[in-house]
Length: 305
Image (cartoon, rainbow, N blue to C red; front, top):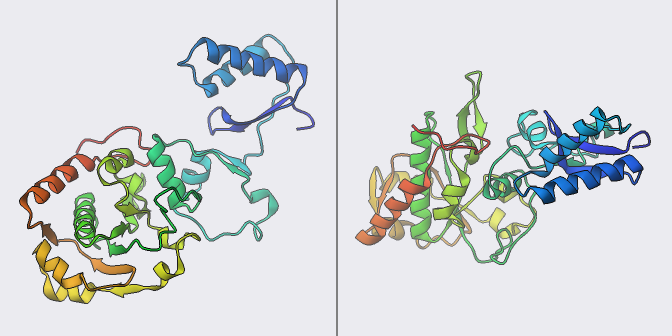
């Protein structure tokens, strides 16, 4: 910053106002005042658009603005950190072992739409510490279940397994810990991906908020050790007693005595849960129909199939 009045984060295509350093030089003060004036004048004008408009104007009018982007290896946009590097899940790399110049200081959680999706992505990457009033991570009483996605690739199969897991979780009063999902890259390769690569998180949470956790949940430091340690594998019991359709009564009878904090169920694709209560069955199916809206990683628009 010794040779600059302003140093914003580079947002892959433009300067980003989400993280910016402004020195109290005449040019820095002038830029800040112009940005503030424009955003107050028009409520629809975003800070980022205003910043880039003012920068262009000051350069055009020869204000001698000294502008330098922050170090692009250490101050990253959401695109550069998550997508550009192929970082869809948390990595085990430790900044104490990386060369100093490659260790990020700031990551702007942008290039993804909706507050729900931003929080979900931070949680998936173990970058979210807020526990909330519901003790999202640290609950000493909440129980969970895990399942695996079918080996056969396909959105429909993966969503079918997710729906079955949510139904089992609802009946057994257990929160579903998601698996990794499978997606096709633009080059046609199949790779692991998070739920926001397949469906809209904001819509899904409208109906199932609090009933699921991200795939990295058990790695979070605030999750009690008892939850990480007490895992009961019910895969064989499920496969031995259930082939396809299963009533809620039979399912509860099979697992209601399991006291382990985490119930592991393996691959549950093809298991259709039928609630004995017809109204409950109708309500759950209606929620599923509304909750599953296909989308892409950035969550910009629903994808019609």
